[in-house]
Image: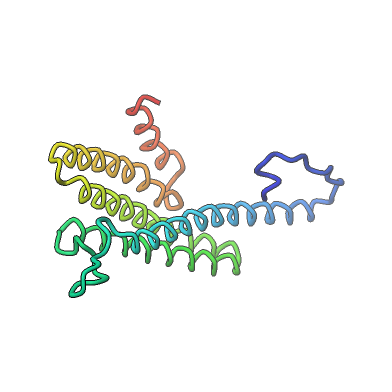
Length: 194
């Protein structure tokens, strides 16, 4: 797979009979599904890694005084609680995606298709929750400057809506025609001037 991605030349294929080419077609389809699973598995693993790390390096740090030693300094703030909840949802959603796709790779291509139908919406949830957790954490850190906190909220909210508009059709790509799912993505790109 790595050699194919970097564009390494392939060896000449000997002429084969019709039955062998049908088998190769099935193998190519299986490799295609496996490549899709591997990409989503990589994204889910990166999300799990980032959200796990964010859970221990919380905004504001930890208390060093005796009665509350080890507790987060901003634990009483609503945005901190939003950060923790969204980070936790993102972490566990991405872990479920990773485990599902690992199991799918052990099965046949039909199990990969079913696993992708489950994994894509969960991956969308993980991406959205990770974005909201980031938004809440940055807002919490800059909340003393009201104008900067509002800019952070507006910018983050705009890009969260763009993420949802792009990702929702991807979740339903397998259940509808390619053209139907592709048009919202083209519309977003056209709107953004790309």
